[in-house]
Image 1: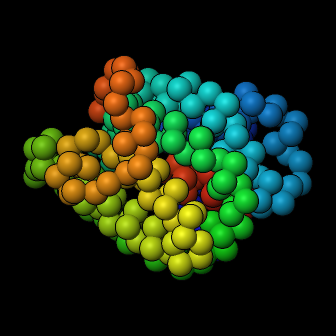
Image 2: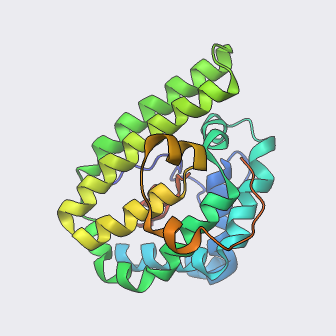
Length: 227
């Protein structure tokens, strides 16, 4: 069973105050796409997850701008970590690629929802997030050092998840790897030497404003466990 990083069961779709930016943006995106009444319907885990993906892909630029607008003013600890990894341009490329591959991924969605081994990836990631946020609060590292640390913590999780998904289905693993690695800031990606097919396909010739995660996939995949 998936362990959600940043979504709590209570008030997921109806209570915005006190939620992290990740919760707020996903909640509003789904509500705007399917309507409030549809959110309360009993659905299979596969249907719930695919509806969340489709809601994001219906207007992923609006979804990303929600993060860009709200992250700077958030004092939530998880948002503080996300701010270190958030890059508008990178996130745009990641979702451009994922949404283009959604028809393929939807045929393999059961694989993504039936890998309890991924809990280990999330547990280790949570510990890393806590360490980064604590160091940030104590002022023990400058912004450059914090971003490097956040990069390492994030890549460890993505590598762990990709390995789990690839064991279940090779194509699903490749799609998720391309999504994860496209979504990290360019400096993080370049310094670590990782490769994303989406960067190759969509990273050149597009013009978009760069600002300063991807926590979304765990959020989307975990929705099925909350409804």
